[in-house]
Image (cartoon, rainbow over all chains, first blue to last red):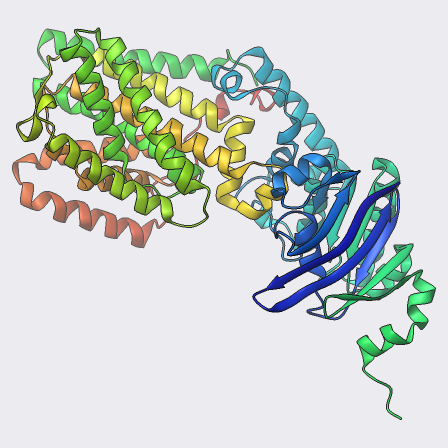
Length: 255
Length: 310
């Protein structure tokens, strides 16, 4: 059964069709790439999937549940987590607090227990602290646990965003340009990390990326978006030779 | 993290010392009633500024109607004590409850939206409450509502301590962090599974509740309450204390409330100079410490305990 099924999905912003008739199917455990030229509507697709935008038309089915119009926090409860293209960390909080906030939906104590400092509070906090630290360790950020997130170097901020998304315990992870602004060496490390977390956390991953070496290197299937429509989809090799894709990226062949 | 450690023991000892010194000098008569009144008012304003800080400094929602919630709490508690012959404690609790309900009524529709709707709604609410009280003869109208004085230093001080501890504990819990994440980045918080509307309403309601409690203390201390004394100027006074102390710092709010209240008391004889001096103080602060006296840091005694226990 498909983990995520998108049927006939469309989104218009007062006349401008940002996404039209998108069809997409992702099976459990797959690693899928979503590419396309600037302004093709890739991030809009993410915003539709995570509930930031309400679709104009079409349905999104995730784990057999229809989830059109659910607010983002409920989408997160269902097991979909994302990172952002323009980093959106909680800058004035420490690195570990960023992860703890994402873990909040799994916290075991209620508000009153927290206020009264009942034993449940200390147990819950200790568990959170330990889990958050584990996530940071995976991403090599544990030594910076008590630094403010805004003071981290760029590459580490990107990794913290992934750590934070993982702390919500998702089954589908959406990565919006995880390698943006990274140098080739960092991108290489990121590729290995993405492969590793997929195996370790039993994840399905959908990623938007401009860096072709990354997309072609890790993705098993690729969807190509242009002007809000899927113009091609297939394995990296098929995509590389698809004339429509070449046209979208390089322009029409001059005859 | 532990509940009983050297740090908490020292804080408790310091609190008892402050309480005892004031109480003893007051009983002995060395502390003049004017100073004692100022100190009680400091306690009232600490509750107000710390609770507003929870809404504005921690959750990031600009609210400028705190005097409105204070007046709701003041009149509701006075109603219980005077009209219903209730006890002081039932009056204070009733005042806090009514203010919390008012907070939910204002908060639920406005906090669903992003932006500054809350500021407008709370400003309007404060004025509406004031006008209603002004025209309710049952509660004294413009001449004021006489309430017997039953709050003393002991009540004011320990209720202030309990209020600050409750708000502090809330902020330093997972639910408090959820509120702070709303301030930091609402879209990211929502994407990480934080029900932002819920936490905004929660913080706002808790803040309103403590403003109502402070209002109850105020009403049962001042002999008389008038709608006049809960105008929007008072809301701005409280906001100024929070900004002066630092948005997102509880110790900052305590310092801000203390400074402003004591300064106002000293300048009581020159009311025309009071606003000028406070304005100059705030301008100087904006130039030299734009984030307030404490910024978003806390004054901590953490050096007293080992790293592991923090």
